[in-house]
Length: 407
Image (tube, rainbow, N blue to C red; front, side, top):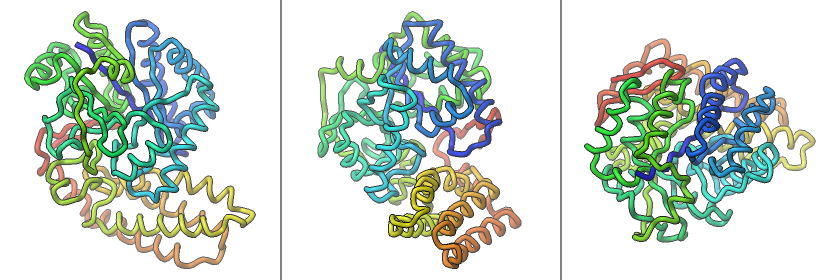
């Protein structure tokens, strides 16, 4: 079986140094050790520039050096992405381009000349036709998407077929959602045979398998998952390949116009035209106010390019486009009043750099924090989470920092 294994590693900007160190110890270094022990293993890796910056700042020169060397040896194929992990379809096209170009600049500076990405990993695999146009103009030859983007349903992608974007002519690589999620969240850590059973029951990836999931799941979110992954990747039945290697093997092709979606999308959400519900839920007033504040901040900062504090404000704004503030406000099932309130006030601080006596941003921020206080005090976030988990079409199991979240 040819297995194209895509790993995404990322930490939000200004994340607590202790957390980044813990993840480096539990996931990033073990992953590098596995690859160095087994030169036959090949992976496709998205190391977001936000993480590269933090690894350098925290002096994890060994991890940077290992990524660089393994890429030079052909064990790692590096992907492009967006620097601070924004939901790209929700951004104006100028901001999309900026985030993607900044990611390339940062990773070239830190990882060196070996960083020459052919493909792109969209944060949260959040896709729209506008994203395809921008990435095509920036020279990316292929993009990674979740299989739901194919038809809005699961199980209809043929992994032995090369899909070509009908409009941009880029290759579209659809991950197998169920096997990806099985490996990330449900696979019994002591029974590798369960993986092969799951694969056979799926009935479509026994010859070619494409998976994509967070690299932090290997050891940090799920202690011991790195050892299971190593056993599977070194199984005699597996030939691991990078995405570029896989694309060279295809004979059959099919054109596709992908649907707006993310790797968390459900068929029912796409039918309701809510493709990014964990970050933009039209029934969630916190989300709606967050996006209003963000868009107004983008326009405000853009209008003040000649202000002496513009460079500083622009850098801070780049970082505040990160998706995490919306994810933690979703309550589906993720919730953190502290994170949402903190990130909201950071946007206000950007405005105050340029206009110290502003009132409109403070007013919007107050409305957001009033909602988070109300949801926290009434425990509404728990009822939202309960409904979301109950409506899951499959067994919902996730891990974060070693903690299990389930239905």
